[in-house]
Length: 262
Image (cartoon, rainbow, N blue to C red):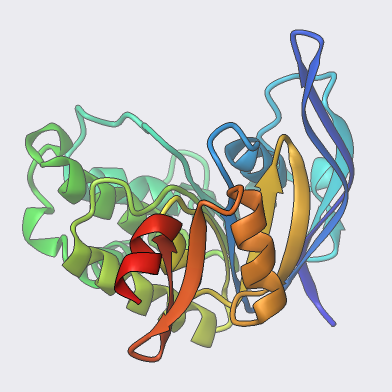
């Protein structure tokens, strides 16, 4: 089995308090894995650790990316193999096409301009997120949902094997969320590995695997389609939700609502 990411002995403390403690975690290559849990569970912190974006030199643990120790990898190589989409990334003063071109920097020689291949990758990424029509507009003239699609295009432009996304569905309306779901499946079919932090639990249930978190710890990891994972999902949210099959798909509903309608 090939692993895209592996983490061992992860310990993150802030102000004397442990906010993340993960003894061991493995993510299989070529899968879409969603990280789910209540607010403050440590989901974004875990994603940053997996991305090698430690905020404190005293954080502990080891992360391997495609079998290589991430801490010892050349920065350029790591940036080519792993792409990151965080929350509240600010590039407001740039043109849309220039924002997405930032995703090609790991592939460009020092001080070199964009190549024809870079431009092709940028256009393909903008087309994939249906944002090509805005390529010449400043990012700050777009709506929140439109900006999110541009940032997703920047992630895709990297053409990395491993893609990490923190709340990628923020500000997206239901049709664009559905488009995002189709895109995730296309990426996995192409051999990519996707790890997404999601608050939209029903969307997370469409992924291959769920990582469930609470109070800074991973409480369960398993296939998104099996009863054991559904039970663990309800438990991590204190039985306030329930999982049902609707039109052939798993969805999560508030327990009070589901008891009245299903």
